[in-house]
Length: 86
Image (cartoon, rainbow, N blue to C red; front, side, top):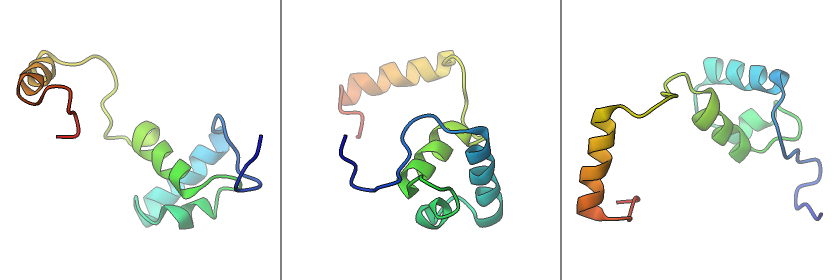
């Protein structure tokens, strides 16, 4: 498999990588992803951003949708259809 960035690690994150990423966010904030990636060997800024925003961010609600959220989705769909970016 060709890789445009030699040394780039693809696949599961380790506990150690998560710890480094979390410490960076606590110290520097959730920005400057390329600088953050410089502290985690083999990871890109995009990987760091995606890992934090989609997995590690403590503000993410995990679990089932609430009834209110379900209705909001149904109502919005009736207005914009499948154009979710709207």
